Length: 145
Image (cartoon, rainbow, N blue to C red; front, side):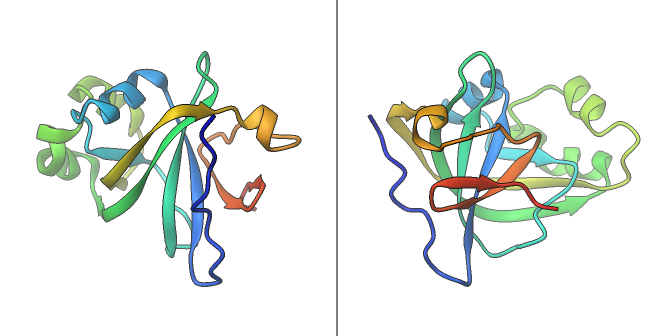
């Protein structure tokens, strides 16, 4: 079983757990999706690694990556910039950002796929999957207030 060994111990940076749908996780691992899209971003911008929680039906932490940069723009302009490596079609992209004036794209860098995905229900007592993201605090997920 894989373990999460690189959780931040530094005060300056934290790690984040992102919930991502399995079809998009597959695209990330296959290298088609090089950006992860978000409607809102972390308040703490000093992030060490992002851990990928593949949501239902997988329900496991399947890998991690570093942030290669964060783009923020109007959804239509962001799409024009990243569409080649978005890993999703334009219909899904614009449906996701419907009604939003700003969109964020997190560039995926140094992806690490776990050989043995981590079951957070076994390793993190009281684990509740985040709606969007949560900060990692050694053995638990802390949802931002």
